[in-house]
Image (cartoon, rainbow, N blue to C red; front, side, top):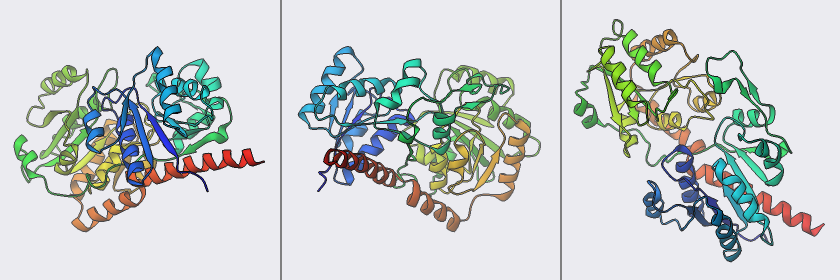
Amino acid sequence: MQNEPRILLIDSVLQGGGTDNQVILLARGLQELGVSVLVACPQNTELFDQLKSYGIESVHWGKKISGFYKLWKIIKSRKISVLHAHHGRDYWPAILSASWTTPKPKIVLTRHMAKSPGSWLSKHYLLNCCDCMVAVSRFTKKVLVQGDFDPLCPIKERHKREPIRGDHKKIRVIYGGIDTQRFYPRKVLYLREKLGIEARHFLFGMIGSYDFPLGKGQLDFLEAADCSRNFLPHGRFLIIGRGNMQQLLEEKIKRLSLEGRVFLVPHTSEIENWINALDCLVHPAIATEAFGLVILEAFACGKPVITTTIDGIPEAFQACQVGKLIPPWSTPDLCQALADIAATGPLPEEKKWECHKKIELTFSYKVMAKNMLNLYNQLLIETTERRRT
């Protein structure tokens, strides 16, 4: 009988991004399934206390030269059978550390971005050096296998996304997951009242970082907030996040005289409450997007979503199909979607819970963990069978 796998998840960042949240949720899900899981990560970061709060065992690790040796010692002493790295910067440390170990653990790499790794070495040899590469969407797999080329796009990073070389059969699609015990429909009036948002107002909100040069479409969102004054006088607009574009956003709000109509809210740990305070989530992505978990979080809270057709986003939108899919870089289409959603109004309570149930059954972190555990076991069984033959 196949022994239970012993999993080591590697994350040398753990600062609060989407990849880091997925590592924590995967570790939590595996632990709830009774699997032995250990996380190698820095222990002085934003998310480390959250990892501890779930009772997940961790070991201090960061990307340093000595880190290769430390990983090797952990793999050997803990008899790790599966080594799983999530950030591009951790791929080669995982591969090199595992290669020194006998028996060698299975190496799994997750690609959370809608593009292949950047270096020539990784593009040509990474796939052959691991046992499996997990793509977080079908679109991400397409980029890894075929590439994606859009030379006329105004966004430079979309011009040329080359495929990765090697055995493409090693690439599997496993969607990420969200915590549906945290994201569910409920009334959150105090946050609206805090901003002076009244019952007659229809509140649209964006959630995400906003770093130069593009952010996640916040500038387009402000343009739509400005253009929609006449046909949406009761529209209100919220931008939640952080990044080095903050001063630019503040200046644009002032220049367009959007004070009282648009609000900037700093990054917050109670994002589930803010989503429930919205009437509609807007995610006007303009660059690259592997999937779009914030869309699933909004659906789980029973909120309609306006988002673009970029990359893997339609796969996330397909989960509930409540809201509007629009072309990217089009303020007129965004304005029309705002008008349509506002005219429709909030979802009925029954529909909200129907959306929540759909997300819970397909995209909860528990489902992600089961799918990942099935992959681990499959890789280990294949190794056992090869040894027997």
